Length: 329
Image (tube, rainbow, N blue to C red; front, top):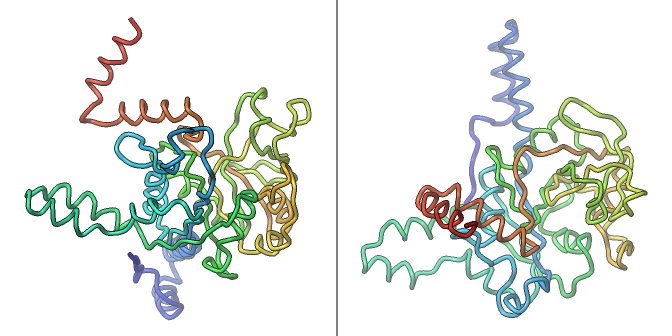
């Protein structure tokens, strides 16, 4: 579902407002906020690379995509889509494999289910499932074989276009926060004059070999400029403990590098390698998001997410606390 922003209209509207308030300080502050908001709002598309096999969750993922495993009462993927939608993103682009039709069905309308609920007068349930259709528009592209995260992003090139900034969201990383994580990146993006932004998390030094790690060029108040990015370095060779997590705002220039299909770490086409090509121009930046990340690509992280989301749910919080206390006796 498209969301229009008539209050942030074209150049004629801006000119009119500027003329009305050009002699006041408040007017100039208003114009600055307006232009900044327009820049943030131009991130309208998000790519969700979800073609992976999910082997860490076998045998469950033999028939169920790992992105459809449930955290509290929604699939992992839906939490990521909700984050994108609440951040103002309107178009969700799923990069999937051919055996993940259940993902398409989940975000499609089910008239049979709705009619059944109507007969039972379960209007609250009808509103609940209809809300999924209001999260945005959905499109799909097939990744024929797993060739790396960079290749998955490249597969969505034609749906993104050449002149747009876009988000990449890895649903394995569920982030519980007051302000959606991708929206936090959008705020920083407005300060970079078209640069690309990666979400960062400061992890214990002993864990850096699990992630892409940045080398800081310059530290600003709430973000960093990046001088290098290393994929899964050895602990003693990591340039920092600031690691890249599954949230990105990218300049479409990255497709120029992904289109070369150069293989890197693990003999795959790595997004990290393409990101390093953005350093300098138009620039690569990072910001530490505020919130709690759960790695739902691991069994322990998946269980941790369910417990935390349960403790934040009004309906089951009290009983869940009692259950956890019993387990620890």
